[in-house]
Image 1 (cartoon, rainbow, N blue to C red):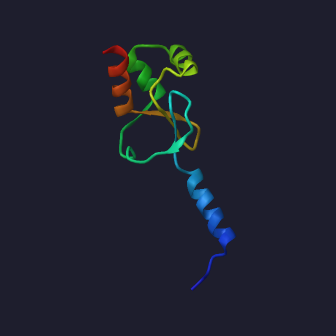
Image 2: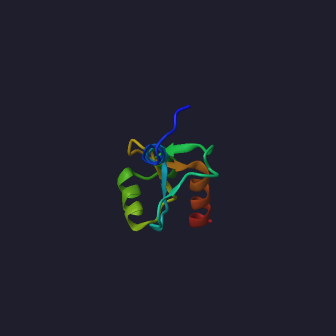
Length: 95
């Protein structure tokens, strides 16, 4: 039975944490790890823009102002939006 040193254990934990998607809130709050929404459908920004009927530049302006649904940043740097977060954002904004 192999025993890991505490340094090796911390390195493995840090590596595992690095691979998890990070959620960035629209209001700029600190990122948190994906939890209860892990099975939610993730939409690409282009899909969200198509659904909303806006251009990517409009999306980027909204995001710069903090006026978009929560965004999930994948390990490769791509941005995704949970379908349920988009629906709640649309309902709150346009209802």
